[in-house]
Image (cartoon, rainbow, N blue to C red; front, side, top):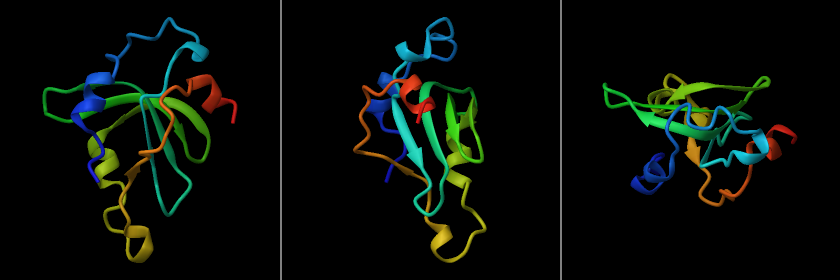
Length: 108
């Protein structure tokens, strides 16, 4: 599965474009998840970088929930070196409701 489609790229707000908005006003554009673990990445903004990679900003739900930056390359290589079931790659939730706000995810 392709993690980042042209459609998603076109919908992504630029980095820092929503920093003055309240979490209840910021929509989650795409959700990535580890199918064999508990980590989830909720993307609210992103931009293609000079090196061709994408830099995202959003909520990372792992050991804790925290806002931060992560790259597409990090998601693509997150499971390298794992064996067995743990070697399943990070996936995009194709059923995720893109009307979900950052506040709704933070409050879960």
